Length: 604
Image (tube, rainbow, N blue to C red):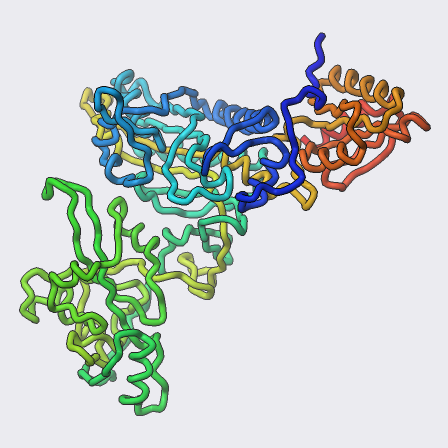
């Protein structure tokens, strides 16, 4: 039987002693230095032999857990036609985030960022009856997104590997069953991979649907902020909801009045002028928390039944002056539409808006009393409780109104989650104040519902022979991103330290020195380990110093290291130690293979 051990004398590998100049996180630095990947251009990497072995193990665990819930694997092309994405409006909704191209016949194509449309059309093509359902399909495929600023190595790249799966059921109850099966499988997958994770409630965004949860790896380099309650529940900040505010009794609040506040176009200047010119009778100072600022945004809608092309809508958002608008949270409220701050051109079309002094009088329900025929929709952040009194714009240069009471002096068209959440805010479940962490999204599950089946006319005949739309779920794992997160959380200042489940080999055998007895003992150990089915990386390089071999071993991060060296030649022992330094012993050469096999079994 030929040897299956990876021999470093012939392995396609070159380790680096210095960090790559353009690597910005530890995982990117170490994966490149250790020869697992190689950068080809911003956000795009080549996989080398050791990297592919780790990737294959990550994928194998995913496939095993998908099989356990009877999901079936398929594989779609990455290059796809425009038409299906146009039918679901995602050709436009994705904006600049997708790679678009034309073939020689001027037909439009894209490099797929996800494959909802293709899965939907596949099932539509092959299934027509409720008897065919449920079915759960998935693929592990390369995806593409034209990231404006690729960063963090494999964590946010332009080309990446993703597991995306989709369930198809006859009703919503079936969808919920599939959703829970996938959610549970994801927990098993991440536990087996050795990735710490938090499940957070999320918004569906461009994916559509209702229920959605993210699996986040808590890492300081993460781009997602999540909020955690004392109860243990967690939310993506975009999905965080503000507990209902109690109405305030305003019966003793004085009447609203307009007062001069010159040069007060910012909250800081307004507070300063209010305290200087209109101090409170009770001696309390005015603060930013007493002010209501009205921010004008543009909601960019796609074409719909009332508009034959994309259109822009101005919306006013009222928020407490001591809080900043969180554009990502706000945009989540309008998804799939995008938002941006109103431009000077937008504001010029509405002369009733006096910059720096915009007030509720010219907005929303009360605008018609001000003679405005096409009022701007007015939404209030959830922190603005009914009955509270505010200092806000009077719609005249250099003037603000004081004691403007929501519910007495002005109304709104609705409420919205608009402001940044902060430490100390109450959790949605009422269990106490929120705390915040950063995380990297490694998986997400969606209850898509009927969005894609309706858009692409995926129907089957039910028990009564009636054509009904199919209920869909969507389930994704960032495969290459997960690998990077494992590297990010399993390393030290010397190099990588892989969990045994994904390591390129289970044991790294080092033959050090020049004595032939050492190399003979190492070869014997490799043979015995192979007979036991142990995966081996063997440093059999004859003219490489022990120091270099030790450094390479620390950098490569194989979980168990077996060293044949001076002690082997002198007294016939092999040193066996864990890469993380938690376990070390010396044993006779004759016992080394069994000792290693036992240790591998403990770690698995």
